[in-house]
Image 1 (tube, rainbow, N blue to C red):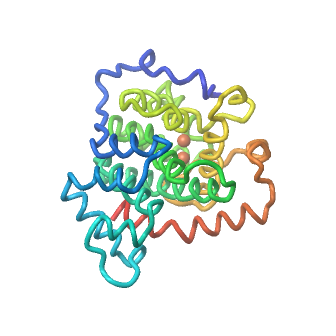
Image 2: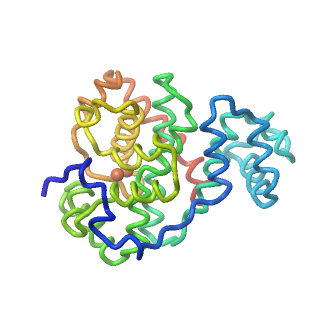
Length: 286
Ligand SMILES: [Fe+2]
Ligand SMILES: [Fe+2]
């Protein structure tokens, strides 16, 4: 069955959404996303929010001192961590720590999905960096949340979703096609519903609901570049076969649109993503 990625979004008309178990977005994540969405956010704003949650502070400092991020002497305060690691790295760590609490069931599928999403987050950030486009931490968020619909489907329809994952692997079909055949809706639709429930900013919602669309389907959208960036990162990480990944579909037109056509550049991004992934994984899934 061919799935229409844009029209297949309104899950409320396809399933009883009132019965869905959707984790709440942690308060700290709401505040951090709000700060990062402001043009003028700075390290003090971030430190101000974190300071109210002592357990969060200790997690943050633990990470800042971990072998992957820590350099030299131990960091013992938020200000020290920001000074040592810089605002961008601290923003990444804070976002990951805040979103990590969405995780509920640490079953094999959940772990595999978060591994994939963490890798896509790293790749999004690296591609954004390479293109000099936007705020890398925002792209990291897009990557982390792009497949949130799959996590929600796995929480709510455990057995059926296990069948979907098995079928995707054995058939070579994309997730959307198999989900659509089994459920009548896709992870993008459930993700879109979740993004609305969480009142996420429109760019994050687009990354979640439209990341399987083509450049031509997205042509009149302002956030087309953000969405295609997630799609390309998703593809790169599927090639790297990290976690529970999707089957590959051609993305030549998307690469062309975003201005990333040199094979050597894509190869070096892939290599960097593979190198950077373990440090993010140890934090997200540790
Ligand atoms: Fe997806
Ligand atoms: Fe994905």
